[in-house]
Amino acid sequence: MEPDVECPDVDPETFSEKGFTILPELIAPKVCEALNVRLEHLLKGDYDLGVAPSKVPGAKELRRYGSGGSKVNTLRIVDAWKADALFQRVVLSPVLGRLAATLGGWSGARVAEDQVWIKPPGAGPLVFHRDSPYFDFEPDHVITIWIALDAMTPELGPLEYVVGSHRWEGRRGTAAQFFDPSHRQLMEDAARQQGLQPEQVDVVPVLVKQGGAGCHDGCAAAGKAGLHFGTPDRGSAFRA
Image 1 (tube, rainbow, N blue to C red):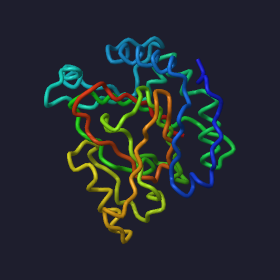
Image 2 (cartoon, rainbow, N blue to C red; image 1 turned 60 degrees about the vertical axis):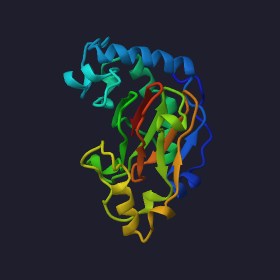
Image 3 (tube, rainbow, N blue to C red; image 1 turned 120 degrees about the horizontal axis):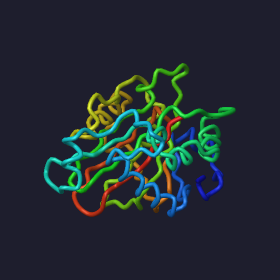
């Protein structure tokens, strides 16, 4: 099942200037709904391709999932595409490959990994971080396409990007711990290294409907606020 939306028109120059672009729609909502159903199967260990993902939540995390308690955690599945046929058809879609190649200025693109994030009500924030340092690539150029499997509103603590942060020098901003109440600290420290005060940093939320997407340079700072109530925040990040 490929995305029902053709590869959108994107401006590589604007992407290069800001470090990200936001797409109002990329994947059809019906595909997102089907992915969310399959996501629940993955959390139960039901892998229709007969292979487990590279990383799945632990038993303690799963017990807390959906409890609404104070210790609930954001869940993460790495390489769902290896375990589930529907995730595989979406992740390996030529549409996403062309989009990543266009934004990266490449002749083509290969999947580095996909990560599915499930942030239930009560989960804390995701630390602002950069993706590229986590991959041993040469050159160290990574493009991330994050697809909203649920409609993103300010109340959900959506993905946020820091404008121009992909041009900041140095490796400061690489998170050793993804979940921390002081989720802006590393980003603000990195900004100060560039001569910027926190109030001068331009943070843009990815407010899109179900199936919309945020695409960013792997050196751009990205993070999320906590989710204190409402419905889960689910998203799938494809990296090339």
